[in-house]
Image: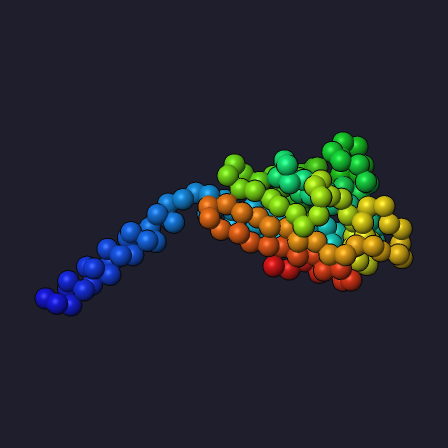
Length: 159
């Protein structure tokens, strides 16, 4: 009987503290956008290497968008400059859902590019001189925050 009462108390405590978190859609949307934004940055890096050309990335905290383009123009409206997403859709734009925010360690909107070997450069830089000092993007929603870091020298995208 004592074991049953203790089990019921533990289940009650879990129900009060854990279940509301599972029912909050912002937690799932925040995690989903974090994964999408991180994979978008990794995709930009790998596309630049695979196609041996620069891929520009535009991060806009106000609109919550991460956009890719082969030219330094955003929005990327010229079809020849639009980076296709993995399914072939153009242009490649990841937008944060409602309730999810994107914050940057630099002024927004911020544009940088990956060169043909995957190294990051600020949009005004010319190869081989990079003034890119690294980038941290924080995605928040549902009481959760996750960061994405783009390394200065290698262009490695990590959490």
